[in-house]
Image (cartoon, rainbow, N blue to C red; front, side, top):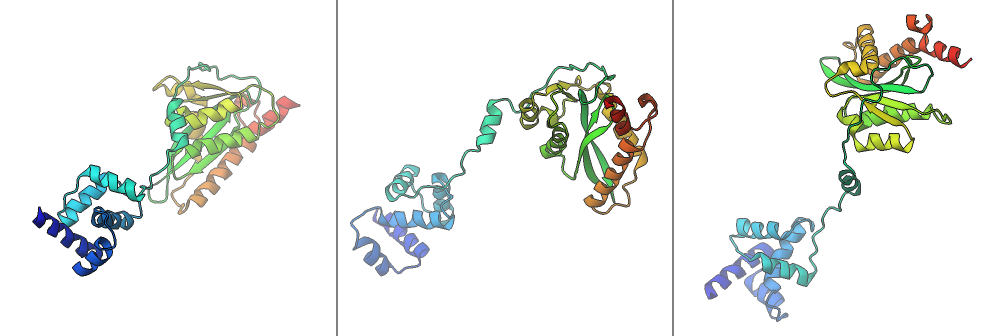
Length: 280
């Protein structure tokens, strides 16, 4: 027992960088607290990790670096006694809320391939496609297409296929509808972006119906797939070196598609002109 205590004192003085006499003078003679030495060891590792360390980590560090075994209950008691409260990450409120409300959810195919819509801003078809630029770099495009006018009403280009790719395009589509009381339906596939809680909530907050293609059936969302096919046929991104150059080319082509490219199904008018025709 005495030998074990000698080893412990040796480890303490080694870690703290003090002499044995200094240890007795400062931590023993001035304090009758039997936990003083062990507290200094625990405190050393605690402060070394800026207070972001728990009981198990302290225990393992004591064993690994000092070959010193200390019961985890003792470490917990000393931490409580001296107020060594571990700094931990706070719970992510959004993450908890999202899980509680089913972060991903699918919807029925309410559109059911009824692609012929008579009035603008009644049904938007949306999806995300991947393209390459430069030397095989990936870029992603999210777009919303009005099934009545065939107009691409909103889009977003990004190097990351995260949820913000879809929500950025959706925000643009919603902004252009400000003041409109016409009921809208948004149709998509069952991809991660469109089943995500954030995307669904944005639609719900604006009282927009949500419809989804059947799983693995791309024909259920043919209008937006047709646009993506057209876009890829008419642009060449191989010379692009930056995402800004990609955005410039995509923007230019979508502007041409909306404002200058006539379509047989639109009385040989471009989408924007056809919209004006319907509203006149």
